[in-house]
Image (cartoon, rainbow over all chains, first blue to last red; front, side, top):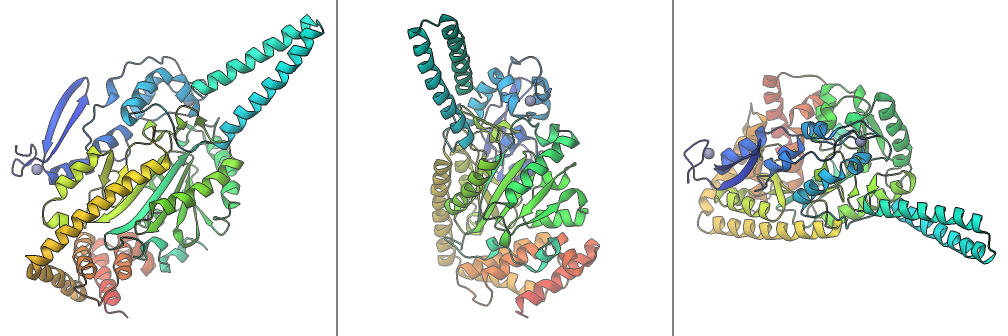
Length: 171
Length: 350
Ligand SMILES: [Zn+2]
Ligand SMILES: [Zn+2]
């Protein structure tokens, strides 16, 4: 097969692009592929995947599930699709339904396994200690038949459990 | 130390030493980090950008490794100085061309630099000479841990470090190796090699990273995936692939030395001859001739020139460096003459 740009050299680089729902295959020689890679806008991150000439189905056409705005920075999902960048850390939580499949396609995984922020570990530890203490107090309150206090403690425990579950799931 | 002092300094990564330095010019690891609760630089108002700067700078400057660093405020630099830092691989295009409050902290011998308010709040990078990715990672890991104790980074249990571009989320790490592969290019095997690389989740780029064309037979190979693999796994994977590529380049060099030795010598010594005698030369021709001469040096065909000199020439013959060395702006025509002069001078060992 000959290169689609110069029509002279043998095409050795093949890749698939998806633009507006249409997938098209491109076959280029090494020189033209390099030139094309260089012509792509250097800082558009999804184009960056292309400049790597990876045979990759770009999730540009992903259904916009995460409607609404990020409460912290005001970014919408369609803003993100336009500029290819999120606005803040909170965006990841706001658009998690759309981002989860995207991350999976880009990285082949949805699970971070590298270095962890010490802070994230510390927050988890603190919550565990706090829960333990509250549970002890709850036991004592029940023993002493202080039901009002027990109900208050139970609510606090539930609240903390909900928070740590949420943070374990997304944040 | 300040920006102008860099002009007469040779960066650590240009030494031309370290493992596999006959094919590996340098190893680089960079980490992306963002502060929690503050929008990323492109979406932050000026007051927020200033807030990032004032939180981050004291934290950086109190780390052990960066105590002796100096800070360059990009918003105060003219385009020549910005280009100069870019040519030295100390900043990215994005930071050079960006707007707003932004800067770079530069460590001793330019081994570590930290960009502030680039695409992410922090871009921490370490460059070393030769194939030393794991060393570069260890150094950067230490710095990051110190910063992590002082700053609150945006981090999620599932998706790791949260970055402006989702292609960096997770470890936020890009590890890359700059390879010189003239024999694979000469024997026309490079296409196959690059194709194989992409299948292994790696990317090949040009000298200045994203979107730049390979030139002078230099290829920058880096990881694409940042989520689902640990930093060590990512580095192991790249190093394994790099060693295979090195093996292929070695075989190609042997083959050229066998069958085509005369042609190879001719190519090397023609390049050397031109470089020693040239009067007018552009940067593209310079890079290509330096590549040919370097191959000769790496194969032991000539011992007159050191790899370090070639690496240095590689950087200082670029436009902004030439102008900084002469202390004034030069037209492209003047640069081509000054470049020729500089090359002759360096190669005659004076
Ligand atoms: Zn072509
Ligand atoms: Zn946001």
